[in-house]
Length: 455
Image (cartoon, rainbow, N blue to C red; front, side, top):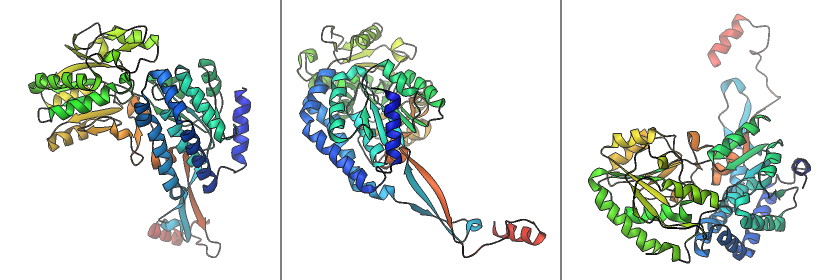
């Protein structure tokens, strides 16, 4: 595939105006929904091949969320497209003033391997509802899912409207050398820097959905049993390969022992006594990441887990005590089923610890004390999160999802996704029936008096 010709073909198609009407956008999403439904089994099989995901987890965490975003856009998309009247400033009268969203044009969507279906399709849904043409580039590490994505999109669209580019670094490089009207990237911080650098050559705006070390904090007032259940779900979902997974535990010193007892019990309940033997337990994406994670287990005291299967690329849910902020496991995003434990005494300690690192993509705080929750909410900057739960904030089309600082820029989901893939034109529509002349030369004292009175 000649990538330059593909991008030019998409730009030419966009300029025909065929993607602009509400009917065209709704037809695109309706067809996409049907194609996903028709290939649901293939999607689940591909996710199992790439990541060992069960059919249940594949539907819960990927397919259903894409379908939910499509349904939300089908319900609300027309209203998002409408021009919005705004108050006309005195100096613009008589006139109508409004904001009109328009598509950005031809966009590039680069997705990661950890949720390869969800994180390709969900931004695509937003881009299509906003009226764009799109090139999607799935990760080469999740090749099976990438192939299914390609089939689905070929079922629905000509490549001049939506196209899939498969491959590795050569294809990524070729795409980033092209001039797009917008780039939406989900992945690591290091690759995000490359994307932003490449985009700068064309002054292309970007959304970067990255990651970071998302803290999970448990204070002495929390319901420890329920907190453990919800934390285990969020941490070990997809074997910890989730950008918003709790990355490390900060538990108040006074309840550390009691909470760890609940945490270890809940791991056994949810993951089994022998997790590596469970048929629904997934695996690490590849040998490189498996080896990296094994290296991070060399420091600290393993309280549970620690066993691995190199052939199957599996690592047990592993809780590691005796960790400090200087430990190697605290120097990078873990992105695996390892859960380091640290303690704190006061809320101020929490703030200092979290602020000592880059702003996290997510933060989770378990407490029954509203004042402490308010304190954390006010004093720590992060992309988004939950009080007394994990992960669920990203599963909503009514809230923005995105990072802060080095964990990302920009957001999407629902109206926020539509806005991300739209440019908002501010327009003044003047009448020709009346003209106020105080802005025209020659400037006089009388005009100056009028100007100061009305402006």
